[in-house]
Length: 176
Image (cartoon, rainbow, N blue to C red; front, side):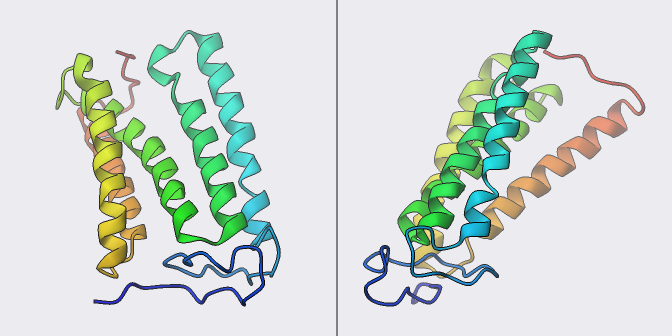
């Protein structure tokens, strides 16, 4: 089965020798070092907000939240690189960044829900990120929209949040 590919960049463009990503977002591609400027520069918000989250978690002494800032920064950096290049190679790392953030939520909530012991949260997180990232090339080759894997992660995190809310409506769960 052939891969889904976005239209390639014209020959002679800075990134034209690379395999294009699996999707073409709504911004027009430019023959430039930064192919999708709006999509690229908007990722600076993830970096800035990641720095804010990192500092806020440190100030509040919330070790359970300490990695959300760096994960947001990773999302911003990887997505910046992907949208600047419009390449499959850097799109892979864009997905890795999203999995880093998603699996922080999923692992944290799995611990809060009692699905895993708190001491296994880091292992659960790493295995989730590595496993989801390993699926990206396979989904790409099978022409299955890779974005569905991120949607699935978000659905799992939302379902966990619903479960946590039902378990303890109107109250805030203590950090573990």
